[in-house]
Image 1 (cartoon, one colour):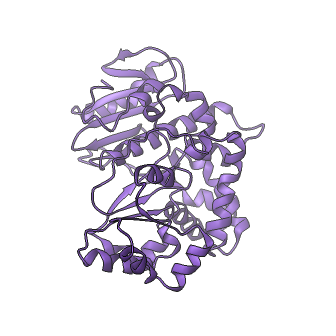
Image 2 (tube, helix red, strand yellow; image 1 turned 30 degrees about the vertical axis):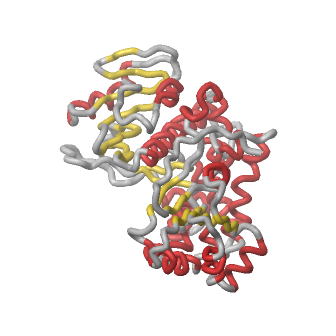
Image 3 (cartoon, rainbow, N blue to C red; image 1 turned 90 degrees about the horizontal axis):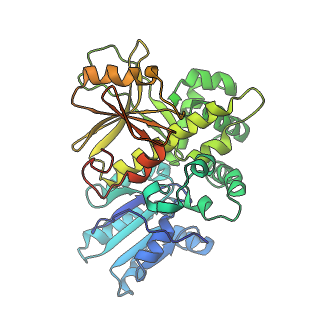
Length: 387
């Protein structure tokens, strides 16, 4: 049973999609916050069969209910229901639909755009540190991640070990998304080496022994299943030559750790460093999402090799953030931030590290990583808790 920890997600008052990977707590949150809603759970076999055979049954159910709120859990299982939802919204009966999904693939193929402008798209994420408060532990988060499903488990490691295979079995294999499950399973491990790095599909293809186009299709599957995301390079008013590749991240540090092979030749600090950067990435993405995406997350890398891990840019903030998995700060750790600041003096520069003190070095605010994460609050519209 999931621990009932208050979430920072604020639902729209109108109808909305609620996307998020399995285990992020979408259904748990809705059960608590929408107690009187009409509820359709398409993971239940009988309901899946019923609505697949007769999607118009939704109208009969809604018209017979006094509730004006309708939750359809895992809508991608029966995407034809979108047409019925569209019809009911157009009927102007004051109905509010909440459509959850852990995959956007079928919805894209079957026309979720039908509801564009009528149903807002929202996202649900793993726990943020500020949601957990005193329960947040950086060391634990780096090993097990922040998925509510895992966080509340008696044996988190066991749940993580089976999490990816659940998707492979119930989404990838059952839906026939790939011809060769063995190749896809090898790909899940191979691309874990790209977590927090520039995405080079040719290298991943070579490791998997498949064609580059196959790897590109696999990456699209991961993104459609909401298991991974890409961070684009920051190019606004760039004065220097920039690289064009995006960076790749699994959506949760624990999922990354569960898929990343570890052997005698793997340095623990390398794996831990990628996990730390990924943990910051998932927090920034969640923060941006819960701030209604007024600010976007990028990274910065010049053709000459200067790189800043994250640039958060938008209506509200302009941050340059470097992440270091070290307890001490070396002068060279600040070099890329100084370079970025010289090109974008309007930005605020931060270095996140594993030390315990706030420091100012070369006009860069150096903050303990756990302090930064626990103060990253989407309810506050300025940077005051960080600055």
